[in-house]
Length: 146
Image (cartoon, rainbow, N blue to C red):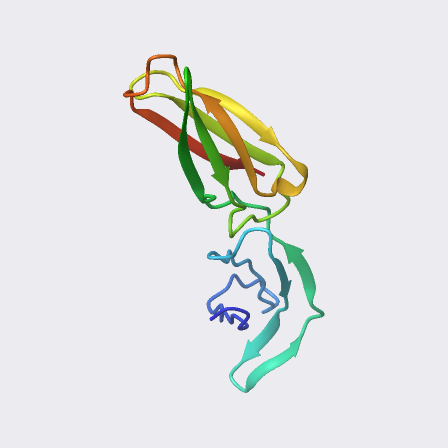
């Protein structure tokens, strides 16, 4: 459940000759670009001891999810263009720098355009289509870069 404290009981930790135990624990499943507070308490048969002071940590950013892409063919004699509109991804995991658009004729190398913008807001653009290629199939990829 989101925002619920996670508890990990670590038993059988390494023990020194003086009976003091210490150890490490790797915690997985954390969200990118998220602030966490970490505390530790000693556990005995009689219960938990006092917790340490909380330590605040932030996980590194991650890769944004896909933006929504809308494509419209514009036929204006004698040329044809493709109009693209995209929306900001729902999960950004940090500040967006812009968008990377890849397009091209199917089964041929893709061209790439960088659409940089403040805060990676929504955007749009026009891509020219090869003259006489109105029946060709194109591939369009809209990638976000953090």
